Length: 235
Image (cartoon, rainbow, N blue to C red; front, side, top):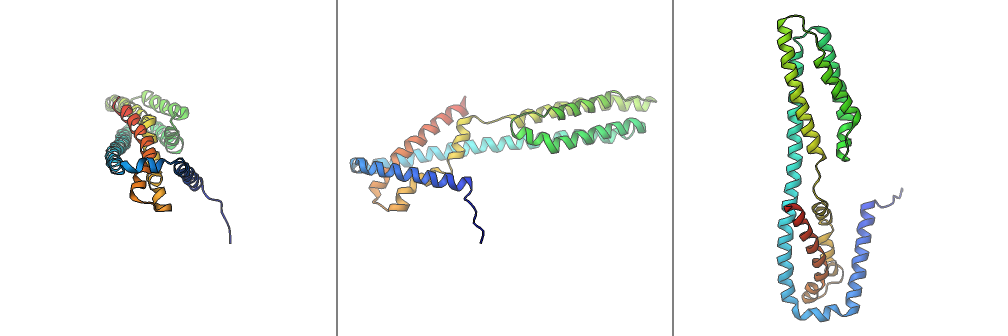
């Protein structure tokens, strides 16, 4: 039987549980539960109220992130449509110019799929992709029409190339857009939040009044994060 070490996520979860247990023990030892048990009902109402605010803000943050994904997807579709239309019109040029444009588009497409997409995901631009796009623009500009029909096609291709450039810039800008750090941290820590709030109950099973009193420090930390996130989203 082959044994494998726990993944980073499992180790982080175990560490968070250990910290929560240690904090719970400190609060028990310091007498916090006895001090707060008289206000258990009020603390329960406050916890519910803060939880409702937290849920609404988390849903709004996820909506913003999903909207950014949709915007990037639409930008990709528009850019692809521009290149598809340009390649269809380039067939009416002479064989040499049409082949040059096709080669330039193929090289640019491969670089985008293999390298630029990952680079934009990491928050940086890919210089080689920009160079290949410039080469594509040059291939369109350097076409040599041999008759009036090809001249009209060349004018149309130049307009399409400009449109493709605008849509490429829009896609890159949308891909590099990041939500503020505070909302991003809100989404990340929301997965561990419910574990922290329910840890004293799931492990030790104390009375309801002590449960509500024990939630207070965790709620205080999370409401601070909610406040910061709200300021970041509305600014």
